[in-house]
Amino acid sequence: MIERFLAIMVMTGFLLIPWAIERGQGIFAPLRTYSILSFVTTVPYLLLLSFDPSVMYPPVAQHIRYNEFNDLFLKYTFVQGVAYLCVFAGYLTAGRLSFGWVSSAGMPRVSALSEGTVLRAAVIALLLGMALWIVQVQLVGGLEFLLLNLGDRTSLTAGLGYLSTAANAMLAFSVLLMAYSFQYGNGIGKKICLALFFVIAAISYTVFGGRKHLLHLLLMLLLTWHYSIRKIYSVKPSHIALGFFVAFYFVSVLLLRQGDALEYYMNRPGELLADVLDNVNIFVIQLSYVDTYMFIIKHFDQNDYWWGRSYIDLLYAPIPSTLFPDKPPVDDGVYIRSLMEGWNVIPPTPFWKMYPSSTPPETIGIGYASAGLLGVVIGMFILGMIIRSSYSFMMSRRTFFSLYVFLMVLLNFQLTNLRLAQFLTSFLIAWMFCGVMLRYRRSGRFARLV
Image (cartoon, rainbow, N blue to C red; front, side, top):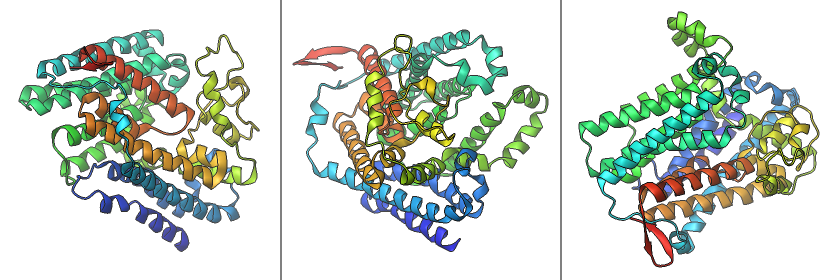
């Protein structure tokens, strides 16, 4: 027990490095934000797991014998600590190199945008997002049917991936553009509109049972304020209250997705708060990828590495599965979940031959699956360089588009097939929306925004 606690403390100590590196840049400087998110998604669950190994995800726990747990726990904390150091090293290395090409590669530049242009874009984004959301609801059978079957939302929304991504992006644009407009002034009307837009987006996300989208939107809103309006230098009571709200929301949505839970809690609203408090540990467990990483470390210490074979699946991504029935999944987490279920699979394997669910490996997991610790070192170093490059792009452009790209990279970019596909889709949507709504003019070789 003591050695587990010491390992957690050493690993956590690495997360304090950004606070020495990024002095004077506020609490949401890039590496500080990365360290905060890493702490929240890793350390609380590790402490919980250290005291009570029974909280481990059952498909993972079945692969770990009691006498293996301690050594695997310690090895994971070592790998995770190395991963943190490699991200920081990649970030600092990219900062010392010349990445001027990032800001001159034909990306749209915004200059002298009027307040009216930004506000108009926010309203149109909201209307487009709501229209796409309504289409989604109709395609799954209507609002009442969806609410009564939230537990089956994955199967109900199958095939709506691109539509869902576009709707979610438009709703996020509406909120972030409204916040972005505060640099022109923050009157009461704007504050009301921002609150209204956020509530609409929150309800739209929640109806489909998703939690991650709203969490990302909240973080994006804070970071938009930090980088566009006024830097945040300290934690305020409102931030703490926001954290409690996020935890309550996260657990509530999870409870409401269970069977007939929505009808049950509508008839007994007082029980929802009690059940949320009883299940608050779910918030800590669900946020963490620790179980997935521990499984991957154990499995690939005993089996051959993939040596990057999972990236072959990207070549098949543009081909519709109707034309290629043996198409492998774009989501490499399907392989990991299949391995957890005891299926012997390696990329590329047709999706229909695997377990129909996913456990995302993220950069650490796919790096270890590809080449062990060396894969983690390379992958996390590259990730750090990409984070710094996106930050340099944003700081050199000072535009809403560059800000949004930076936020996507910082909060959701990973070197896995699924995250790469999601990033590319979101990037193209943002590119097209900004190109149309924030207007083009020709300047030299590339179209630029004015």
